[in-house]
Image (cartoon, rainbow over all chains, first blue to last red; front, side, top):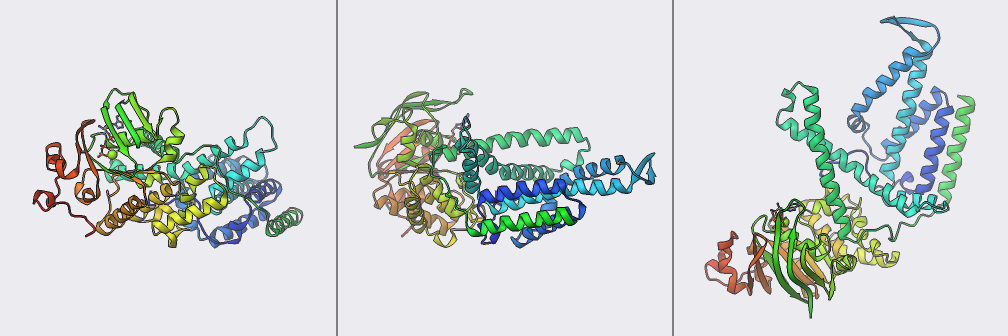
Length: 252
Length: 249
Ligand SMILES: Nc1ncnc2c1ncn2[C@@H]1O[C@H](COP(=O)(O)OP(=O)(O)OP(=O)(O)O)[C@@H](O)[C@H]1O
Ligand SMILES: [Mg+2]
């Protein structure tokens, strides 16, 4: 696991790193709701802010695009459906389907919302330690009866721990196959089977090894957790985000 | 007092392969033991029984007087294990976090955890990279990080599974020096290897395994000449009749 994927924690000293994980989760919820209400320019503005944040903490946007390129096809698909299916004045007809101005706007809006949420997630995972996420989830679930907060947070923590492992395994499997000229096989079904079967086997094998390593060091859901503490800074950031939100919904 | 006692230990995996076949041996507190054997002889499998990552399908393993199958968590606290592949042992997202992982699991207080973490990092010489990402470290640094992660739990027994694999000459010497210092400070040490040359000069006892059985056990000087019978290279110094020569001298 020498190479790294974008979706993993990057130790740095930055303002975003310092924000309490509970506040960060709250911000994601707020921005998520805002983006549902907001118009194209304000979603665009929010995205620019997030991209700026990503660049500031040293994430290469090209790396992100490369990591998520399969996702771009999905977005293009969503965009096309929206663009061709919205009402309004048709200005081009392709294969008997009308492309409308409203459709273009709406398609962009939907895609941009999805992109915004992905980028927010990326910003969150690269600036928050898994231990902090775990502690935040612990805190959220604590007042709820019937749900063991430490269980839920342990599972979330493990899940976050395994995502980069899975991405890494996928990349390694792909390059191992390229090294032996899988490209000469044109049958996509054959290639998919030959890719997914070893990948799944590999993921389970590695998950087993990691959990064994954790067990060897006495892992359980009873453990000393990260201590979270909110500072003045967190509250100020919350107010700023709320203000930006209100302004963008009202005026843009 | 024996800190580890293994009686008639057998292990058969669910697919029916018998990997350990009636293993018998015990380890005294403070001993330095080397277990040698060719690939597939069952060394890793044997070590995994010492801290309850595997359980016997026959026989018993006792750690400090208590059966491992009865209380694996206790065994894991007493016996720390440095894995053959350090990559899989690394769990934290930064060096400091990885070392703190073990003490956190022991439910220690924050202050104690921090103290143990910095001490383990100091001993392994990693203090200058506390905030690095573990996966970007070199092979030798990763191995030392894996050792630090185990040290922070303050186990009485340290087991090392092929601690010198993938290490270059300086890396090997550094890790070896650390192991010897830990032994001096009172830890019981168990090392598996197929390469005796690097470590045998420091061992109190040598155990040779083949096909899941112990085929030789005793003082290194007495049995090392039999090593080649079982597919292990005999160190040149012993073949030349020069006695045991440390890699550190
Ligand atoms: N989970 C498993 N299921 C079935 N067989 C296994 C399993 N794990 C290991 N084995 C088998 O057990 C035997 C001993 O494995 P082990 O890893 O203990 O050997 P080793 O002495 O550590 O070898 P090496 O020097 O290569 O590390 C091997 O033949 C291996 O194929
Ligand atoms: Mg092994």
